[in-house]
Amino acid sequence: MAALDQAHSVVAPSPRSRRIAGALVILYALITMIPLAWIVLTSFKTPPDSIAYPPKVVFQPSLEGYCNLFTTRSRQTPEYIAELPEPATACDEIVRSRNMVIAGASNVIPRFTNSIIIAFGSTFLAVFLGTITAYAFSRFRVPLADDLLFFILSTRFMPPIAVAIPIFLMYRAVGLSDTHLGMILLYTAVNVSLAVWLLKGFIDEIPREYEEAAMIDGYSRLHAFFKVVLPQAATGIAATAIFCLIFAWNEYAFAVLLTSGTAQTMPPFIPFIIGEGGQDWPAVAAATTLFLIPIFVFTILLRKHLLRGITFGAVRK
Image (cartoon, rainbow, N blue to C red):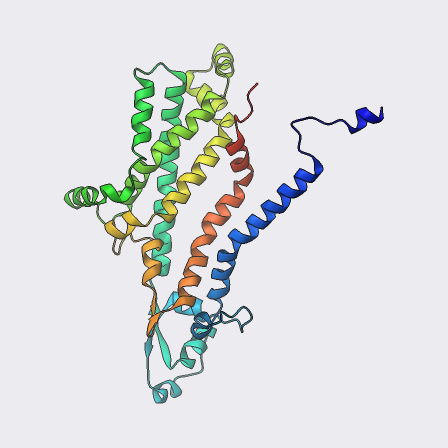
């Protein structure tokens, strides 16, 4: 009995292996989080503290970076500032301490809104089209299916910048430059190949017998798809949506080439946040922190689906 109590599966990790693996995972997580933590800390520094050497870990927190991010400022004489009424907000007080006044709002809110519209719009379209296409490849006999799937995947082989100039010329000819629709269609076209390949694997794992039983009960093919397949493929759809959103949210090359004002997103906007005498690093860090929040929240909300989606089909019976 003692020997049976001490026996364990040959494929199960030993307690020591689990501890070592856990320590390595924690160490890796801490190392990868250091740059993010430093960006957040920099957003609460003053411009002199942000470029201090050696770098300051302990400092007096300031909202100057966020004030500079959301406002435009103009320099005034001390006499003019002294004649102004008392500061109405904390940002007014911070800006006046630099002998400046707030001239108006910056473009960060419109650029942030553009990122949300374009990224989430293209993600929805890519996942929608990818789900339908993957279902067709998985359930129907498509002539030259393997060749078509390879052709779809081949659109991801080349870097996006390789086709940037032809796309720029095409968009300028059809009037889609610097438009939300143009960027949504472009990101959808880039992401749909990834969505098809990921979702086909998930749908292949769903037994056909489920749909056949539903159709025997009177469901049409379309009803069986919505009532049976989609709920079963929810984890794969969520995982695919996260990958597509990350690409559309972070994409820089197309955004900087095809947009300049109306549809400009945050990635090309952040590097051009200029302060007095050069780069305003606290404002840049504040913009980066703000830029990280939606994708972070979206991933946290779907984290269970993401974990299940990545491991779905890893073990076959």
